[in-house]
Length: 403
Image (cartoon, rainbow, N blue to C red; front, top):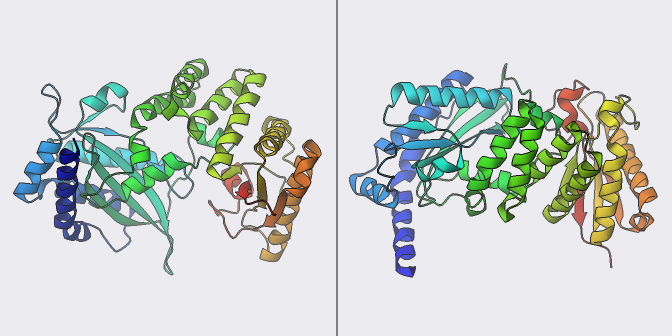
């Protein structure tokens, strides 16, 4: 067993060395239209699977022996993510469509299978994709990245990217991500992003790959939620959370959302408490408190802000029972002068801290406040509505307690 692992490791290293130049050649450096960038990234990705040196191609084939009854190069696609917001959006859905349509039309050696647990044993490859904002002095730019990972060996066999101009891209999140009370950010999301940027020949993120199976269940649950089939979604989220690998922020957030939609308020509060526990374990939890513009008062519509007091209660209880200390960081959207927003974000953080202290007085000596203004905007539209709610979040960062 150890010898086999050693051989695989050496083969992986050889694969990476041989493909590093190919990867560089297959990545576009000039920003293009979204359509052109998506097409180039797709073509470059596939080119790598067809241009492997013959002995490396045999290695890749040996490490990935497909099921005899399965398509020779079956692919499952884990839904793509906008790493600017951590969400699935209209543009990530468009990215998926463009990639799958182009591969189906131009590369018949591949066949896409639904992202379901049963297909993980049939498919040869896992496809992941991300959109990431690139900081440049020119026009706003995003990087479209794709990776093909061999499911059995866990090796990334192809990775490509292309730059696209960030213009006319629809960042509207799916229903699930729009409704989620927190910013979905944890080790699984980070592992997905790392896998998508991993050079060929290296291993995909192990934490992410170990959770691919339950990831199919969470994805199915989220699809049901987006279709407003809340009872069915609830069952799938519960199935995922019944496994150790399913203890993920997106699954617990889904359980909270479906319980809220079904009027199960007690169960929803319990679920939010577990969301807090996951955030504490991760050392960070971004909560989407929506404030009235220019104010420290919560959004006036109770359909939006009605659950906020419960959120605060569970955050206070979770941090107090964990014996943790934390920094409460306020953020604002990008509208108005920077100095005004800096002051406003600090006031919002102080307001949240006071509310937490009212719930758990012990937190008075275990919390700090900080105002970031709009310096860490995620969306950056400055529209002051539900679209840029992530920019008006309050983050809770676990920090060492003073001695």
